[in-house]
Image (cartoon, rainbow, N blue to C red; front, side):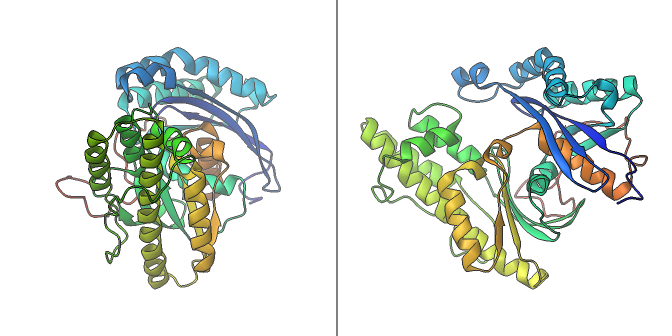
Length: 364
């Protein structure tokens, strides 16, 4: 590490892939000790909630309106000057192209004005590396990424060396929660609303399907569960009690699916590398308390060590982007990671060699 760093470094992380405009400063000293100095997130919930989902044009305009203020606030709260920022790390995909263009153009302009490196970051890789900012987690490990746009099980052998061992065949877990919340008239976004409603419900009150359970792979399918919920909800009077029971039943079914798929992934990982003992769970859905508890218990039962990022780092944020930049600096050297010509990508698979799903032309 001393060959790479001969001074403290501060990395600015910028995140604009979807509906959060976020910036953070992460520092690293010569001893390899990291510190999250600031983490500012502007959520666009109010802008999109009336539409029941994210409107790409609205998101892009909000990013453009807020990014300079968010970055300035991140630097201010970190108690450093612009001159003390040593590199800018920007989420360049996958995501909505409007937001990606706003973040990457701002980051490139900032890096050029300060003559510091511009580091393009894969948003998904940033998620699966994020717990390493807070805990000492060695490679390799198994990672479950559960977010609004993606659901994947991944063998993380090293930085930039990731193999997909399971993915969703249709909806992501986060997408299924969002749609379930709309079906139950609980509002958007769905994750928190379903979890809150489920607290007062009976998870055994409705018999919902558990798609893919007992299948001999680590893939997911959530569309059938969502459709079953819709058909039941159509026939019910959706008072508060019914909503709570349906939410609890849906959450229980989704958690059963996740648990079963992870159980298979543990078996698959052992065949790939019997020494792999760590299990990382990331993405917005990883904030769900029931899912956290169930996966923690499953991991320990199967002799895996479970790791989750702090709840505020589960959803999109700049801290994970800045940390991913630091990881790249440590591996490749700060003089070797500047890439100002990188073009943002709406699709950027972690495992380019993975098999495309159904009629897709490339892996997700």
